Amino acid sequence: MGASWTALLIAVVGVAGTLGAALLTQSRADRTKRMELQAAAEQRREERGHAEELLRAEHTRQGRRESLERRRACYITLNTAARQYLTEMTNHLHALGRGEDVAASLENLEAARLAYRDSYAESQMIVPDAVSRTTSAAKRRLNEAYGKLRKYAADPVTHAAELATMKEDLHQEVWPYVGAMKKAMREDLGVED
Image (cartoon, rainbow, N blue to C red; front, side, top):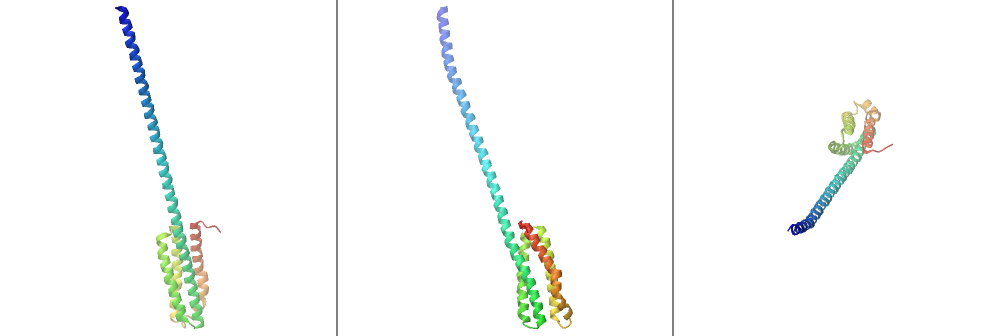
């Protein structure tokens, strides 16, 4: 019986080894497949994260472009309105000096003032602080000049000397502020001289 038990034992060990090898191979195959699936899932997560990051960056760039375009449009309107306001003050001074068509020049001046006021109000919501300071300084100078002009024009005989020097005052006391405003806007837009 010793030989038959030995043969049986060898047969059992052989069958167990064959079955164990199959189970071990299957277990390793399953483990390898899980690792491949985990690696693929991780790669998809990384790709999705990268795509989301690119999308956020694109949204940021788009927002900056839109902001730049809004500021550019605002700056053009504000600069044009300020220059037109100043030009209409000068035209009104000329009309007062010649004594002709004062009502029409005053109407043009009022229209320019209102257009400037509207564009300035819009700019307050859009422009950065550095530009806002220069636009505010220009607005103060424009409004001071307008106030003087209206005061002098109300009684041109009494204020003839002031009216005579006001054109020069506009060039020396107001235009530099409008120029500084334009320069600040161009710097904000990245426009080089």
